[in-house]
Length: 82
Image (cartoon, rainbow, N blue to C red; front, side):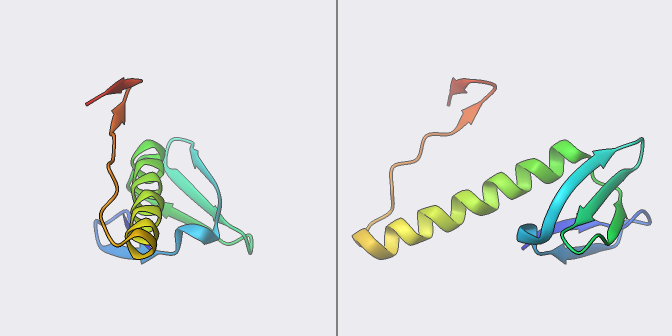
């Protein structure tokens, strides 16, 4: 689940696995797999970053369960390691 914000600013949780597409036209419109559409205040880039971090955290958690220790993570921003 990721947090997105309604146009008036109220946060709500959205199941990232249900997102089919995200458009910025100029409002951000999220289309879900069942064709429902949500208009949110967050930019498409912010939403994609939240999805990326959420899915990365799932992979890290699974790795920790399997190996018994936290994985060594490398953060990439703009193509450069931090």
